[in-house]
Length: 281
Image (cartoon, rainbow, N blue to C red; front, side):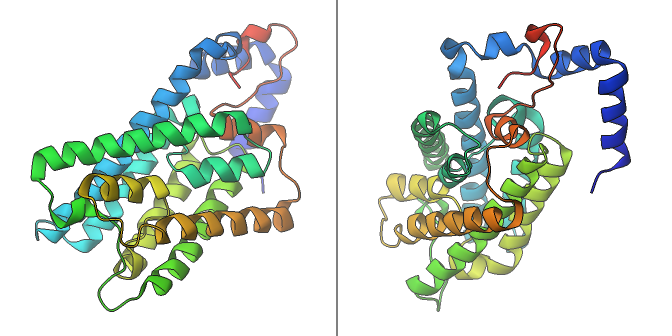
């Protein structure tokens, strides 16, 4: 359903294309500049920095909660707020995936090139690991550095099913907002960040609400506890695959232009006059 804002922007693009070009150029930069493969480092650095920030808050919140410094609601809401902030301030650079299964899901939908997936995953893992090394230096190896583990009284299979359900919904939210080219805007930030907080508020006692192999990989690597790490790889991957299947049923095949640009961290304003004023892909 379109909003008044969308209608206003459509009218602006039709009746004042030069003004609209300048607005996009000031917001997102030159397409010619960001088509240069030598500048891919900007997107990769964005993913590394964003994942570092996410895991710093997520694993750090787990440590602080384990020490009794903050409440469980505070520990699980904080990552959602951090993701919201990351999408708003640098989602336009890389798409703010921050999660290997999000990159894979976008690629499965045809909204993101497969050749860029390995680089995104590697820097996401590096960013997460750097965050846990920082936490290790700051706090020591407390509570497995905020690792995501099945909660007391829950078995690995229960945590696995929870991670499948939680990640399936998370990726559905992300794909849904991206399909309307909102993943780099306020709607995507509120939807994704809000869902992460919501999931943590009710499901953290079962699985720790990882929904992100990078978030679980780093504490396992730095603390040396790989006991149930498989849960937080298999669960998110299966959940993401189910979300891609649901998106196919709900919206048909992916690969539409708006979704591709949202996944890659850009929106494309189609201008005939000056290609350099278009948004980076």
